Amino acid sequence: MAKVIVFIDNPGKALKKSSLELLTIARSLGEPAVAFNGELHDEVAAALAAYGAQVVYRPSAEDLDAYLVGPKASYLAAAVQASGAAVVLTENSADGKEVAARLGIKLGAGVITDVVAVEPDGTAHKSVLAGSYTTTAKATTPVAVLTVKSNSITPEPAVTGTAPESVTVEVPETATAASARITARNEKAASGRPDLAEARIVVAGGRGVDGNFGPVEDLADALGAAVGASRAATDAGWIGHDAQVGQTGKTVSPQLYISAGISGAIQQKAGMQTAKVIVAVNKDAESPVFEIADFGIVGDLFKVLPQATEEIKKRRG
Image (cartoon, rainbow, N blue to C red; front, side, top):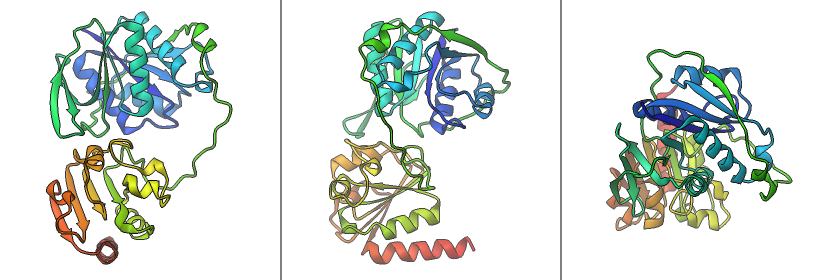
């Protein structure tokens, strides 16, 4: 049975849903192992066991986070070589894609990004052309590297889980020699809302909010949702760029996506059209967003969203 490595980078005190998805996919492909970077908290270790990880690789170097992603790719390459893994799974984030690209060069491996599903034989279903189509692809190289979009599958724990073996992987000293070092970090203030890339519900605002994200944020809080935005809204400085959904922002695939005051241009559609249910609110009945929406409301978001928020609060008591 093929060995499959899941790269998990700095999960914090609990594994993210996207990591659990990767572990679930890994079990369907072969023997799952984890290349882990960060502090291994008890809750994380328990989750790794519950989701079937048989081996947890740890880097010999403890300062990988002091650099950009180059040394992490070197560590992951060493873990692949030590394990003989045939498949590597990473998140479809900016860092995940860069690690995958660097790993592909180091190992001469085929790299497939924007994956939304993987068959047991390794065939990947890939979102292409700004999410307009899904194609299939399969790497013919000895090692395949796949970056998988969040919310692609439902995480499922293993039927039986045992504590995985811990193995230290030597990271070459040359890995950090030519890498840019990070000299300072500023921690983002916690909003109390779920992470945008992993949220089951997203409420997003665009040019139509005219600088006022209040109704969008109120509805998001009532639903326990994340707040997203179009590029026009972030470029205008109405909300931070980390909230941007689209081709040059984050890609989301929630169960419910509520679009308020967003035209639905191709740049925005690329980041959200794989959502299970799309609800659009726009006062322009000819807006392109209604072409992809499951439910459309032609109306003023400043009237529609507060009414929805109030009704949700009433139903929740």
